[in-house]
Length: 116
Image (cartoon, one colour):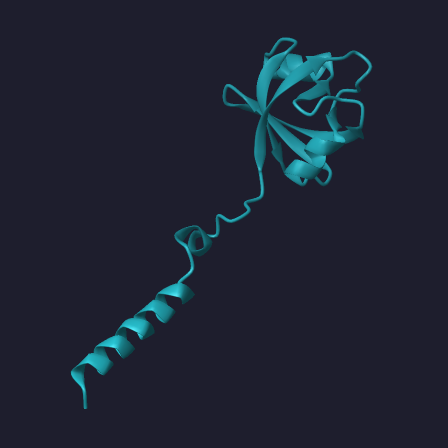
């Protein structure tokens, strides 16, 4: 037996084993995460009924919204029904003046929108 051959075999075995090990991001499950919340601007629109919010279709897909969303700002939270509208910008939602008054926010304020 030649000692050089056994060392070469060990080296090749280690290289093949290392190629099998997945990257750290794959172990953590961070390859493609689902977005749960997003910061958006809320606009006051009198034509929107109280208890509902108009959201763009892109934002609905991005957050995987089913029926309801939660708007939170300054520790206050409000749960609203979603109405999808294609013509809205992706970073903007429309709410009723009554709902905005409950949250204590003005027109064009930044809020956190969460899928519920």
